[in-house]
Image (cartoon, rainbow, N blue to C red; front, side, top):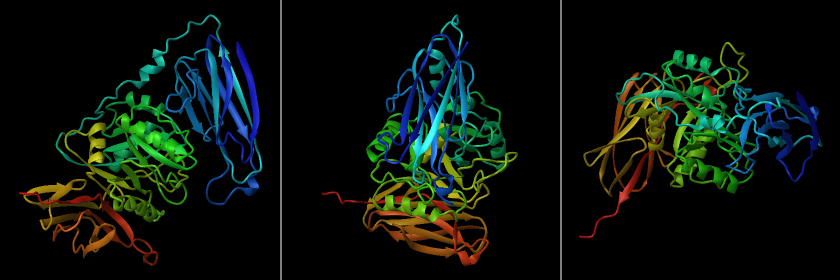
Length: 481
């Protein structure tokens, strides 16, 4: 037996429930499958040539409710799909299979309307019902929340640099490829790990959990928390992260919630196109300082990161391709897997926890792709050794020796950047070089390194080929005798 329901309405600028609207419907006992489809209209003649279009996104919540950070989330597809289904044992990618408990469910719409006067929509809901079916217990759905296995691939145990990409999208949101296709492509490129960060969902977590040891690439489940005011990646939180916030206090709740669960929160691509507009949110420990090819306005992302470093915040820079498609799918975006590449120094076997711990520690540098350049900044002071992310804590006047190891094309400019300003600069006269610089510790601050040069069209200026995270400098107060 099939029950059908249609729900219609419209969004207009200034509606009090923008950007989110809930459309309740009742699911009877014995439900075996829920199907939802929708369509909407906008004024296409007034959509911008570049930037954000008017759009209506869709998702669904079950009987557990819609309270922020405690909701009965069952899936989200944004505007990437016009229909989806949920059943006990399967669901459309982006949605969670499991029991269909009887009671009040809610279709969830998210609307951005800036160019249209009105955006009418129509939602169709169908529920297949077997009145004699036995209801499944809730534990079937909740079992997906179990602990992740820490290591998914046979890897060496020696501490070393590993290469990866922290930002990608599959068919579980608006990507065009399967997780298996991404894993195979990552291995061909020489990546050691790849984070799958589909938009506003965690349906891909279960698939990643079920595919250990199929390749030498570690897959890290994550989520791109996607709002109309900015995006952010989350890794290590262990489940779905709510995205239904509209202001700084709401996003601060999400950041704090992620940290309480041992996760990492990273604002994405804080530059034109999809800027980060939550200006008063504090406490995040990571930022995507490089997304896609350098010329795609990544100087703005670098400035966003530097601003926080100059303010005394310790925030680790990572890179992410934001890849949405690889062959055999048609590539419709300019972002390619592993561009840029994030290198992390893992002290032990390659694992999700090892990678994320390296990010927490700031043991990270970025390069334009998996082939490099390689750029490592280390230091020594008072017979101690330091690497990026570490703190040199010494008395004023202490002698410091900095070493910059570069491996890549010659004739590139190698720079040490002190508190946002170029402090030292040299040209790599060969493809593998180590430079040393000496200084006295005179003031607190930070020091990072970068490799820069020209590519393609020199008249367009320099690009960054690689950059490191900072060494932090602290001047220790003299102790009273």
